[in-house]
Image 1 (cartoon, rainbow, N blue to C red):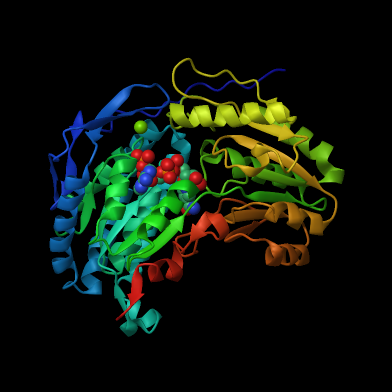
Image 2: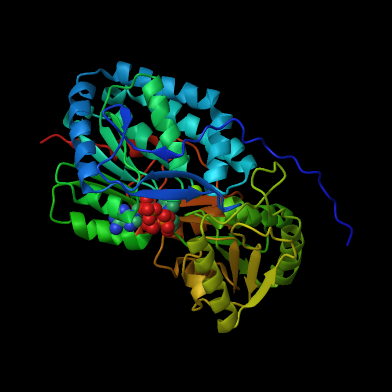
Length: 479
Ligand code: NAP
Ligand code: MG
């Protein structure tokens, strides 16, 4: 087959300045930590070491809490209008330096530059603008006289959308008058560090935003600290359950944004070509490292063969490789650990009897890569149908009747998102009513807006981020 070959179009990484080592950001400054241990963060597309960041310990968390207490004294005396000014300034600076942030995100995490540039960064800025707009209007939106900020919020985020998850957490927390201690994921700390530099640049009062890098032990120390008033966590269901147990006997707020195994349902009356595009976007966006990824294709049986043929053809055109190349559709898998997890589950899928299709792209020598993968002939009981793979792997399940589509889709412990593809509006409403998912897209997938609440139920967690609901997650009833 003749293939179109694209000339490389590599985004220059000379715009970013990365220090060899970073301390923790407390009292409005980067400081050396009590911990003398560091974690190397690498570029998963080359395995090159980018920097070393502090592996924060319990004493570092204590220092961050003391810093946050001082920050809260200042922040709680500042009016909503003044808080908004800081957030607007941050939003504008993020826009001004968005190329720098996008390149850094791609280097540290492996996602394609076209996604960090055209999706992550615009969304990050939009979140800060959106929540900045709310900061002086809280009294107008609810009977907010009965509500008050929690105080010190511990925020723990994953590696798949590092800066975007920061913005989902930090912007509403600060807008509502709280102060923050953030623990980013160990494989992607660098954009959070650059964000801390912006906080200095806008003159955010010391202690309002604090950053302690580290691993799971750092996160656990934050969760255990008695002076934290709320934990906002995004990550795996396993760690979410641990945090819920750990905080169960304390008067503390908690939101959990956890995993998913979303059904993307295609009915036989759907516009097939659009649905193929939507299914591709639903699972291959960000290498499938997406909590709400449409990782189960729930397909009406009578269009199975036609759909799969078109889908495989479309998958062959996905360009896998250097994430800094502007033509790249699928970048590097975020870490060796995640690559091993994906590989194991895919091997398991083959063993259990699924038919596997992988595109015949060439993978780079260094770094962590996985070919776009489609399973057909899978049973709902297979691990690839039940477990979150968090990689570019789609599992197909078939149905005959709409009722069966709902039954298959809801047959999961998760409940984060779902997609419906049909030309009939009535079928969309019928299905949406019955699907157990926090977010449901119809004839589209993976669409986000800061004004639209996002979150799950069942084992996908509780609490909402985004919109007015997202603000409420950072306010509690005055006692
Ligand atoms: P993870 O292992 O749960 O890690 C998430 C964060 O928690 C990281 O910062 C991690 O630190 C930290 N952590 C690990 N153990 C901890 C502990 N015992 N106490 C406190 N913090 C701890 O999840 P992940 O593998 O990074 O991320 C992928 C998961 O996130 C997927 O399940 C995905 O679905 C979910 N996710 C959900 C949403 C949503 O909105 N629902 C959005 C994005 C991702 P280290 O990185 O240092 O281990
Ligand atoms: Mg990294």
